[in-house]
Image (cartoon, rainbow, N blue to C red):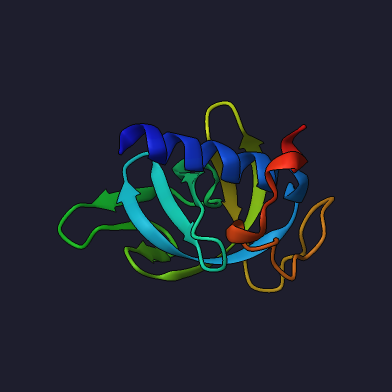
Length: 129
């Protein structure tokens, strides 16, 4: 099962490599001191948002509520919460995606707003050649 999961992650990362700069809707699937794990709504792809990229505040991890909360702004990122993220990096060999949180009114830098990537089931095997 672990090998299957790694393979799926790599295929998704390879597919989304063409979408770097695009904005996606997702949900917070995990919260740690290091940052947020986000699951994209349309494809189910998983990625990471480093805590250091969350903004101009210091975000502390509250284990009891599974949240990162800004000490100055009190802005909270909680498990299960909806987020808009921009794809910063896709590493197909590692099967990893890195995102940044999009703030209200923020435009993607150097990218485009995505209407969503092709659903995962529609990826053709010959595209990887």
